Length: 195
Image (cartoon, rainbow, N blue to C red; front, side, top):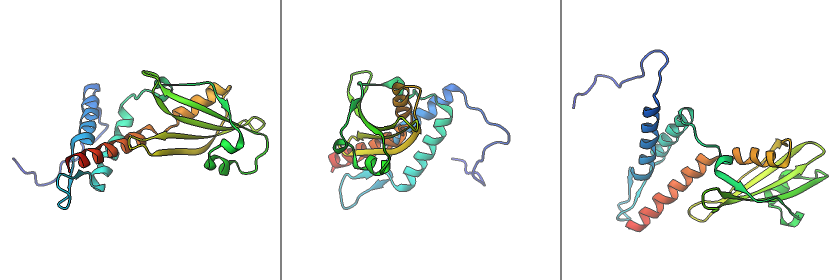
């Protein structure tokens, strides 16, 4: 293979990428996430993993993909049940801590599902301050390893109605972070299976 005297660099000016090229990049990054390993354990035969350096490069590529791919919004992929009122002693501790002593708060819990097979996605708890027009939300989902992952709590201006407020919190969920965490879980399960 021919060796260049320097590493290649991007051409000057604005660079463009076609839809086919963007799809190829998306497919390649997904393939690397599922099948590429650069860490092998001598002490654990069959162990395969990803180094922090490789994970950093994959995260960088996922960030770039966010600029060229039209990902469906979560509110297109998810559905939810009618909100149920929550008693204060049923509210997640992180949400209670965030609320503090704010008066006039009503607490709601919403079960969220995937549209395709009504499989559970997670639970959204909301602390609604109708007087201030603000809502604080906390999402709880389970990763592939069965561990609870909390996202939030975080404040937002309330929507025009409760459905719009729920939609805002669902669309703010950091799905790429959950997918990366699940990829790590898959890699660990594969490594354990081989060992």
